[in-house]
Amino acid sequence: MINKISSKRSVFRKENYWYWGILLVVFAVVFMLNLKTLYTADDYIYRFVYHTPSVQPHMQKITTALIPYSMWNHYLNWNGRFVAHTVVQFFMQFNSKIPFDIFNSLIFVFLMMLINKLSIKLSGKKNKLFIVPFIFLFLWFFLPSFGQSVLWVSGAGNYLWMSIIYLGFIWFNLQNKPTTWVQVLIAIVLGFLTGASNENSGPAAILIVLLFMWKHYLNERQVNWNSVISVIFGACGFIVMMLAPGNRLRGAVHRSIGQMVLDFGQIVYMSLQEFYVIYVLMLILLVVVLYYKKISSDALISAIIFTIGHFASILVLVLSPEHPQRTFFGGAVFLGIAFFILIYALFNEAKISLSVLTVPMLILFLFSFFNAYQDIDKSYQQIAGQYETIEKSHSKPKAKQNPNVKIMTVAKSSYNAYSGTVGLTKYPNAWMNIWESKFFDVNSISGHN
Image (cartoon, rainbow, N blue to C red; front, side):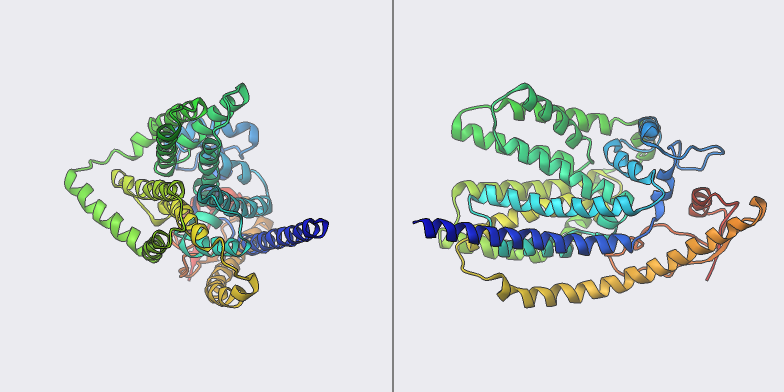
């Protein structure tokens, strides 16, 4: 008996080491890509206290103490995503990008852990080590515009970091703990931050919690007041974000029914482009788990709820005049949780060794990673060259600090943060040229091919 207990503890410790080892490797990979990604587009703007999208004559460099004032101006003049941009501005106060690179890589790992925890809890199964690398593969291949939503400072603040808030909100509400002052405080803060996180994933997370509340009520005939409070404050956060005067200034575009129908078709097409592989796999998994009775009714309902959240977060974009691929980020995360609930239900009892899967997984990932890294490194070298040229101009008098830099070539990979973001042009009066001139404190910046 003692030998059996000792053997189980040994296996547990071994699996635990492997688990943290996998997460460490993921951290190292993402950290390397972060180090190879310098600032771009809006990052230069958030280096300063926000006033308007245009450079002002006298602008203060952002500090932690000035962030509330900056976000108030941002709320009035640009948009209501003060939670996301608070994260961005906090890291833009440093003279080095490395603090962001470290914490951003940790947040990515934490996202993996949350997806795994939610999938385990809702499937009613035990943690399986061989599934964890698949979660990374899912995020690598199916997070939309990986470069913009994970590696770009401004993009990561708006999408990657906000996913931790709304998944934390869902996790909190799934605990169904007794109502105490501590729980109420957590419900208020998490609810409000989730509602104000962004325009589509935040409300989709609230919808997911509402559906779980309904499920809990039907099963237990009880209402969890922590969840009620968190949803109410989630709605408050969403309203505060959407009522931002900056939103009305930017979004004053007439949305006809005909235009929304066209947008709906485009959004559905984009969704199929992004996720058709997962849709097909989920249909196959669903048929198999139902046929072999591998899934409980609770787990099946949970997978359905997250699938509803996935479609809700995407289709609501029909109300927005813009819907770039990175706005599908929350939808991808919700779909991933639904997918891995089914994976855990089907494969939890499978005797699959991690070593058996290592070779095909490495081949699949490394082929994609190699191509992505080449493009990212090429952009890194070009931007680093621009920075070097600009820094050299500081040796001249201010009036003659007019560096002429080589314009970067077009980024090709969706894993590259410079793909689809605004960069320097030939013209010193271009919007980005003016902002980078302010960022580097030079008279002007022009470009050449």
